[in-house]
Image 1 (cartoon, helix red, strand yellow):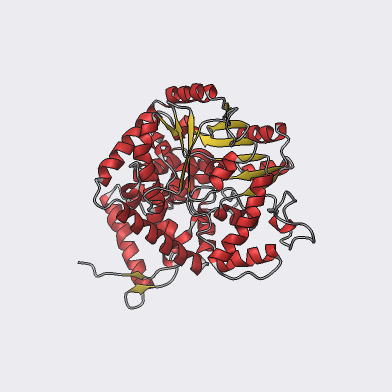
Image 2 (tube, rainbow, N blue to C red; image 1 turned 135 degrees about the horizontal axis):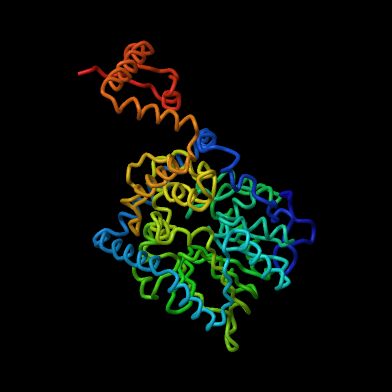
Length: 486
């Protein structure tokens, strides 16, 4: 849709249609780049944006510092260990807790749906919207909806879809996608947002965060008041009560779940916690590791549609439980990946993510958790190479609030990639030859001697500053300094 000014008489309040400029473009381009491009190609493209590299480093450094200050004077490690225990217990007993949650949720009047995969989840959500006679849908921030490319499916069903988280709204209007689990527009400049909103307003807006936010707020409020269905994610499911817990820093979460007459929560099955009291452990860690806050602005506990005597809330509440490859991990080598609470902390400390950003990972999740979840959910053929998009420094292990051993999982995925013959043929041949040669002392000495001689010939004053066969990806951007042999 064109980003134009409202037509005369067409406002953004009072029940009138949204202006043309507020309509989001159908189908985000490049929402899934795994099959069409390689990590190296995507990384190279993102490395050409100097602002992005600086912005990501500044933002993540700030968040990590705030995290450290948040837990000063507390036994942070003990809290993390308790969170690890809670998540491990919940995932190890997931079928039982899932059944308990469904029973309690249905007793509250919540309609529960199961989606085995992305296609079924899209069909279920679109079907609920169609059955409700919906024309407009408002969405709160949801990584699960990004997983299943929900917006495109709803648009194909003829629905007007409006993202209401400010960052998500910006990337939707730009035809872009989020770059970070917590901060969707970490990769965008204030100037780019001003240019977008100015086109939508039909006039130049100042590059002032307050003014730009006010412009977005005005139109989004109208979207809330005219929406038939609100779609949210869910940070946790409480098994003993059948409730959905939603954690947000913007009021859009509560408006999405309470103003429209139908609320749909799309939640991964791994989000279960056994008891409501477990929130006392998990919430401080989620908010502290996500943003450095003591607690987020809004913590909403959703327990069904409004009652007969209640003035607020939806007439119907549906929860779509998404499997999408999760149950296949239960009891296996990579089960601990399901412990993730989507705080984004591992992205903030990853030296690879900080340079290339989230888009380089080709799908929904970036950083170490993306390098683990993408091949597990999408398969080795598309996402397997991401297990090599890491320095294996272990910083992600140290910061994870639930102590997921991401370093070990990445190594496990590398082993699986080899076992499944998913690595490129050239890579397999090279490593097989290297392994064969270095098994024998004579061949080891011969190959290392030849390598030293070749490097010496290519060097000038002890520095190799050109591409070398077999070392091209290293020497393309770095000089190789030769040391003296002791």
